[in-house]
Image (cartoon, rainbow, N blue to C red; front, side, top):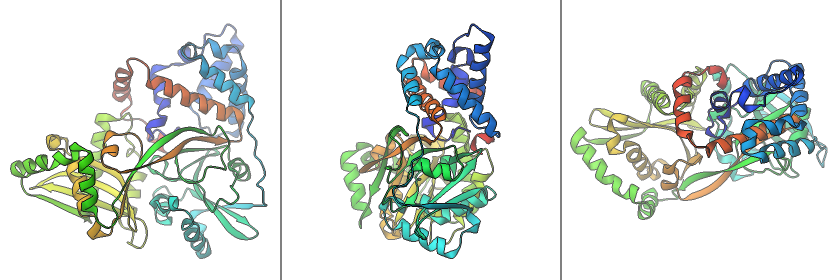
Length: 461
């Protein structure tokens, strides 16, 4: 299914609410045309993943026929932006193909649980090659936690040249479609490799009998992608603390008055609620459950989907929470005012890098901006706990720009050896971009939240 946890790809819900079948496609004149449109809509828009490879092939055939047909340009939605039809058709005509690597490569694929000691040693060696791989999402500890939580569905592609391990790629395989490990919870993914020469993604997919790979936060080398695989470049943010995190906070306060004025709100919170205290590395599993519950309540208020509706994300967070400090592990930080838990953050930490992952605050105390207060306390205490970098991940929330000093980028897109599949998802993305700028967008979003706040957990399968 489409990875609805990523705000950049919630088109599936939007289409079904704002663009029903008879709006997205034209009213065809013949029975044959109507069946073709309905088949494409059902197979690709409503149920983009299917258990049957035959159905996938039929969807490709239908999509290709429809996208090449004059019917496409008659669709009411596409009349609003004719360039979408042009882009989809031209993308189809550039039929992507899997090219052979410049040097002979061999690849095999095994369940994560089948890796041996030599594989893990090679994993750590490859991670040291590039700073991008320092993210905890590339660590065996994170991959293992997800694999355990999801019942062992993580696969590892082992890529060798001349018998030497030159690349590892962890992924989920769902109906011949590959997804990042941990789905929407994964904020950094790619092949872990030296990338010399680049590993061709379409060659890799073909060797592994995969139709496509959907990525929403690819970091590191991208030379192995085809020209049109990347649909969008998304800003990502981090805070470099160095050896003095208090000095880093002072620098931020000079630029952003919101942070500078936060101490006034924090003092008021202390006066009215009680003494402020931070527990940077709280080891109370019950408080972790409470943090998850608070986050779910926030999703019900603000998001179309509750990403914690399936059970496996709970298990994953607890698995990371119990990991030894020698690798990546889950770190819970809580801020109290008197007897009140006003804010909490669950992050994933490895060595000196803390990935700011799941922040939440009690809305009853929103007037004090407790989330910002917690962030400032974490930063001010980071150096004495060995934290040198706080990675805020990708996306455009205003607070990320105010709380960071370094900007980079990640890639969002689809790589596939199937031209129709690739073109269709590129069209979906451009449709989403168009919808973002449509009038009444906020009203549509509120309506979607009302009808879809308890959407099926299968969308995070």
